[in-house]
Length: 179
Image (cartoon, rainbow, N blue to C red; front, side, top):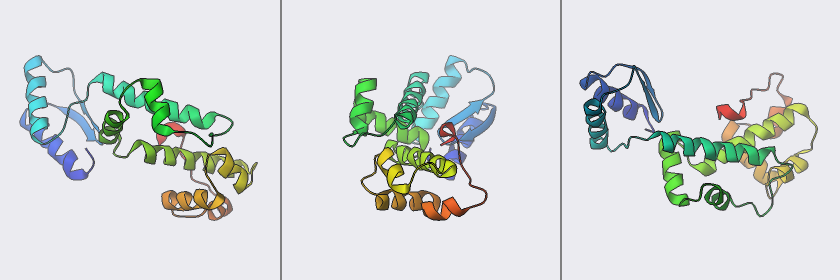
């Protein structure tokens, strides 16, 4: 699910099948109680007619593993110059990257690459907050080819340059697990 219309469509399927739910959000629906096999099958069919797949717990666990791998990567001393995102994920999960990428996008509403960029920008915000490194050192540590590349992505994600962010009195940040 990647848009409000998708969420509404899922809510309609749940209501039509008389399945009580707490909320429907990007990539998941929180329902009240377990479903019997018949209801679960009806729900799956209803969602498939809309073009959605029902993700099993294994898939959710794979997404969490990808997120954890990427977060761990940023906790390292430095993102290596030859760091290969798809190669690292494929190596750790031993699955086709294309399939994992599609799964991630369908659940998270963004690509793995975009998610990693968001994580790197949150790490940059953290480094700016503590003011321990120069922008050049940050770019190097986060695996950017230049300060300009870091600044461009920072502005694209936050709407401001790292220098503008640094001047803010109250610096808004997210935890790595909130990205």
